Length: 114
Length: 107
Image 1 (cartoon, each protein chain N blue to C red):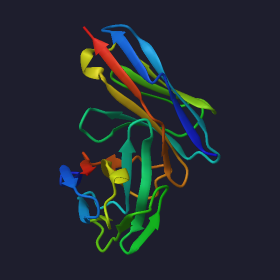
Image 2: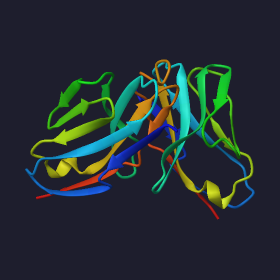
Image 3: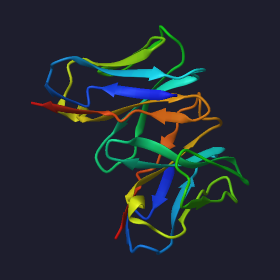
Image 4: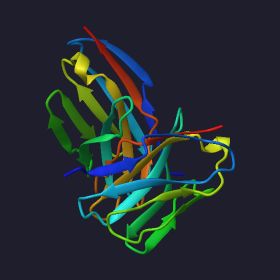
């Protein structure tokens, strides 16, 4: 099993550009989520999904969109990139609800917005 | 407000020098407390889940314990390969992460 796979690993964008960060998992997990990690801030939840067709906002959702058309894939879209979105983005998945289940993380996408 | 605080921010140990990392939390309705290890350029790697006060879990040189207000990650006789950032997270309806402890173990 590959676990959670994120692409690309690195990306540089100009302000105002849009892009999609890809996330796929092969563990048949229902719950998937996106976090951003910034120095001194810890991991912060952007959006999450409890199953195909169901998504909801996390702590810092502004400027990001998600959709979940299949169990395996959970892409994160930046609509109009801003320098404040420079960060490392992690996708994670777990079997069911997050409160009592460990989440499994991908290796991240390092995004720089110029 | 739900909050997770880890201390110290950074810790330097000599190989073989045992120590503990602390994770204190203020969360109502805790469903689980998680410890992760994160290496540079990688995603967090799951280590332990603790569900109730008094629970302990062990893996090699690591032992995690839980009380009603905090958790400790004890590292016994650490080796250089234990160098990493250790993250604590508490689960309710979502995971709330601390900012981590950067551990360096030098020979």
